[in-house]
Image 1 (cartoon, rainbow, N blue to C red):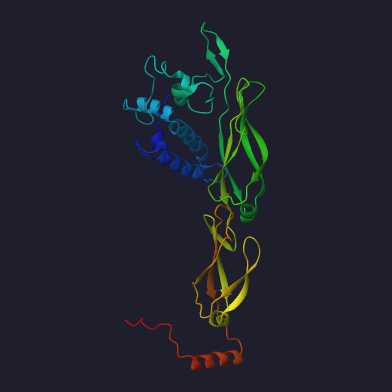
Image 2 (cartoon, rainbow, N blue to C red; image 1 turned 180 degrees about the horizontal axis):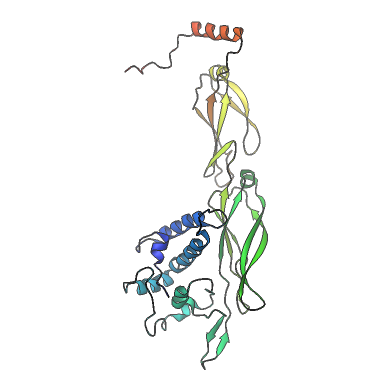
Length: 317
């Protein structure tokens, strides 16, 4: 079997912190998720990332892996565990099914055969009770659902044991309840919706990472939303009270007299709900109407004569 350099797989240094390892995994998992990635090897890379993260996220497994890695092994080298390896810590793999991972991973952490059996005291095989593996997936939701909450239908393939005892991919559809105020990148845990356990063991959990779909009006930053609001020159010059769209419905906003393009106005608490709720920022954009008639041109000429105004003052070279 080949030696796996899990740090290289995740693109982190061996001294990386647990948070750095988690961030690296989440970033790469989003990039190579088979549902969204166009890379030819996306599915294989996604599985490699899951295996590497499983090995490094747990301090005990990581310490065991580091002990092996200190032997100077390199990615892709032919690897054979030293004689008697793992006898002192084999229980670290008890109760877990690692059958979806590589032979290298199972040789270090498995403690279980692929069929869910362990060698008994007399050399026979005794079935064990094992918890199923957790599943990580992503779900894309629209901004209205992120604001108000709702139910999102999700289809995914789940690994299950077939009647012949072999692992197989089974399509499954779930109705996922989205809480109000969910933000981009947040994880939702669905207990017991991961891979099934063995020997009557409990199923793993399903972890969904939320992604927000783009919106034609709003740009989301955390819990805050940003809206570009077109206004007329006279509304900008004289001030106005305008109905402005928000995620919770239209509200009236006072435009101060003398406003220019780029001015930001804040609607407190009008972003995504939470503790505290986000705000909505309205960015003004002055739109100048075209002078399509002689009368319109005359009005512009009169305004030009009336106003002693040069917006380029101070720009001289």
